[in-house]
Amino acid sequence: MAKIRPFRAIRPTRDKANLVASRSYLSYSDASLKEKLDNNPYTFLHIINPEYNSENKKTGIDKFNLVKNKFSNFIKDGTLFEEEENCLYIYQQTTQNTIFTGIIAATSVDDYLNGNIKIHEQTITKREEMFKNYLKTTKFNAEPVLLTYKDNNTIKNIISEYIKKRSEYEFTTTNKVGHKLWKIESKEDTNRIISEFKGIENIYIADGHHRSASSSLLCKNIRKENPNYQPEDSFNFFMSYLIPESQLKIINFNRLIKHTNGLTTNELICKIEENYTVSEKGKDIYSPTFKDEISMYLGLDWYSLIAHPKQYNSTSESLDPSILSKNILSSILGITDEKTDENISFFDGTIPLKEIKNKVDSGEFSIAFILKSIPIESLKLVADNNEIMPPKSTYIQPKLRSGLTIYNIN
Image (cartoon, rainbow, N blue to C red; front, side, top):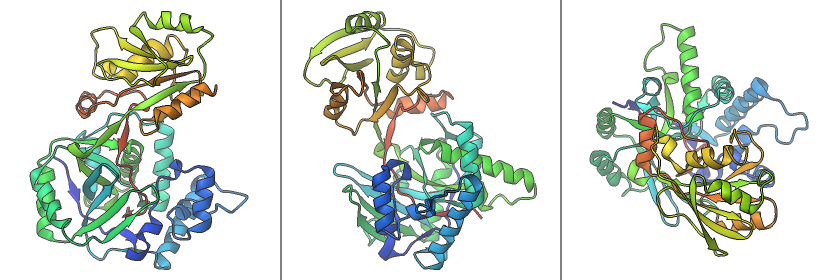
């Protein structure tokens, strides 16, 4: 059973939606971020960078208060407004070869706490606490957590009827991605969707583990301070984008390593052969396709690495990122903590292998390991069994925009 509900979104006026909505601020280079802030007075980036021109920047709660004030200013000047009635929203994102269509709703924190919403990635306590303090101070969610669920024909049919109508927003961003948003105002349709989600046993977090964890942490703190809280109070929910499994796109993450740990090419390959069947593939770029296969670029040559057959204790251990971590990165190259070691970098599968090859050829890195994407069923098994995958095991699309719909926690 999954509990969702409509909410009164704070969102941009129709004429400014394309100017307000932004990618995650972490995805911008310093130069690109400055260009956006200098030239677009409406971008949501101004809200989360309220003092970008200041020399003495504040941190922690002091900065979060500035974010809150900037957010209030966007509402006061009419760039953002609050919906008069509770709504669900249909959001569609169109890339050159994929269409993602799902529902933006408020999702129950209790479903996260009791395991109905399942995770596959471990969160960092320090970041949880930081995001919790951010939410407590600013009082809003601006980017939905990406959730996925088993395909449902009733929900699909309702969505199909709405997307035939004129959308509330329709714009294309400079990365050639189309964005559309529809409001579901009908109580009948809303109740049908809510009822269908009640019958869905498990929901999976595809992207946004820290956002959901921090919302949960804030909710527990508020409940502790206010034992007479009401179950429908806004802090008991967080904003989510729910998309059927068939539309979710899981992409691989490749690993680039800065050193060979003092080993020559022959010495490294000899050690790798203890756990992999290694085949030289020559100078042409080689992508893995076989079961338990990854590829390696080293010393101007490409190699196929197929892990030796083995019995694993868990689904997570049997996945390519885990096998690579245990049998090469840790045991041979001395990289024991992939989250903190500066000798490893992660490049998602949207980056061309030619570009990765060039990074090795230039000497910036010594080795590249190319992995396949992980199937959705494996990701679900990891979550169902309460396992955790290594960091950067998956790069999941769609990547959502901040500021298109905003959830008021108050």
